[in-house]
Length: 604
Image 1: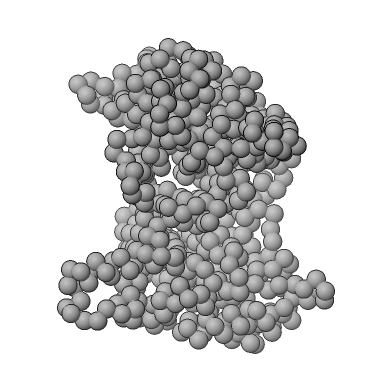
Image 2: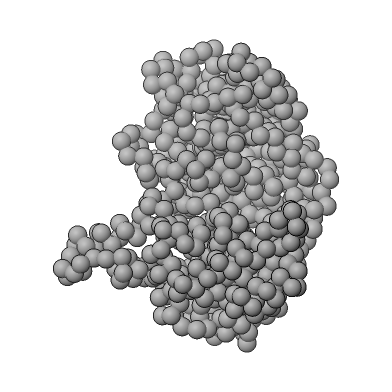
C-alpha cells in the first residue's frame, strides 16, 4: 500500500510472551503479518533474541532448533523462517537482533570514540542502539518492491521478566512513547491453563504476566491467550477487568489442526479490527482476503492418502532441528494431494554397533526405513551417525527407493557410491577421517579451522546445470541456473569427480567455476539426488521447493507426470557448455516460469 498515499509513517506491532516460553509467538507474529498483508499492507518482520550470541550459527539444534539461513548469509533464529514462509518475503541478517549484536555495535562505537568520553551505560546507550536498529531495519524493503513496508511486526523472544531481556523491554517502552499512540500496537501472548482437577480455565498466570509487563513500561492493546479450547465468556470478562484490556481485544489461540488455520482464527475473532484500531489504519484497510489460505488449510485437513518419508538424521530427538525440512515436505505433499507421514530415524540406530548393543532399537529403525516410500538425509555436523546415513543411502540406491540428500546428505551419497561402486573401502570425508587415502569430501580452502562463527560458505549462491536432460533441471523448469542458499565447510573433492562420473554418477549442477559440485544424480535410478545447498529454506506454502516436490512425487508415483511438464525445449543440447574463456556463457531463452504450473497444487 506504500506507493504514494496510504501509510505515511511506519507502524509497529510488538508481540511479547508471558508465563512460559514456547507458546508459539513466532507463528502468532507470522499470522498477524499474513492478516495485515491480506488487508492490503506491506509487512516486514524483526525478531529479537536476548541471548549473548552474535547469531544462531554456533548453537546446537538441540539447544535452539534449526539455524535458518538467509540470502545474505545470515544464520538466524528459526522464527525468521516462519516469517519468510508465511509472508513470502526475503529478510536480512539485521532482521534478527541479538544482545551480542547490540553490545558489539555499542562497544565498536565506544572504541572509535563516538561517545565523546561519556560513561557508556545500558541506559541510554544500549537502549538507544536497540531503538535505532529497529528503525533502520524496518525501512529495508523485503518484498521485492521499492520503498519501505507499511507495518513492522516485532517479536521479542523469551518471556517477560527474563533478566536478559530487560534492556529490550526498557528500549521498547521508550520506543512506544517515541513513535506515539496510533503507531504502536502491543500484542501479549499468554497462557490460560486448564487444571485437570477442576476443568476450569485459570486467568491468574496471565494477570501476573500483564502486571509484570505494565511494570516495565509496556501496556498491551491485545491479549492473545493460548489455551486448548476457546476462552469462555466469563473468563474473557475476568481478564478484561483485571488486565485493563477491552473484551473484544482478547483473542483465543486455541489448538488447531494445522498452523495454516491460525491467520483464519485471528480473522474470525476480528483481531485485525483491534490492530487496525490501535494503529489508526481503519480508513485505508480493506477486508482481509484469505481465500488461498482458507483453501490450503482446508485441503491439508482433507488429505487421507499417506506418503511416508523417512528422515535419517542426527538431531531427530527435536523436530524443530529440521523445521524447514518438515515444512518443505509438507508444502510438496499438500501440492500433490498427499498426507505427509514422517518417520524419524536416528542415523546411529542403523549402525552395526547398535545391532550389538540394542538389537530391538536396530530392528525398529531398519523396519521404519524399509517401510518408507522415500528417504531424506539432511545436513549435520560431526561424525555421530555418519555410517548410519551411509547405510541409508546405500539401501535407497540398491533398492531404487526415492532419495534426497541435502548438504552432508549429498556428501555421504558420494562417499557411499565411492565405497560400493568404485571399491574404495576407506573413502571418506576429511571431516571424519583426516588421514583417509581416498578423500571424497574435503575442507574448502576459504574456510577457517580456528573460528567457527560465520566462516562457512553461507547464503545464496548460483548453481549452473551441466546437463539439461536430468531430473533436477526439469524440476527447476529447465532453467540454465538457479540460486539457492548454502551452509557448509566441506565439498566434494574435484579431483575425484571424473572417476565418479566414469562409474555412472552424474554431477548435474556446479558453481560458476565448474570446480564445486552442487547437484549429484544417479541417472538410472527412479529418484536419487543430492544437493550441496539447502533448498528447504526457499520453499513456500504455495510454491514448494523443486527437489522436495520431486522426492514426494517419486515416493507416490507421480514423478513422471511432473517431469513431463518440464520437457526440454526443441533444439536445446543435452550437454550445456557453460564455460568459454573461463566465464559463464549466457543461456538462450530458457523458460524460467511455470515451474509448478501443471501440478494439482494449491498456489499462494
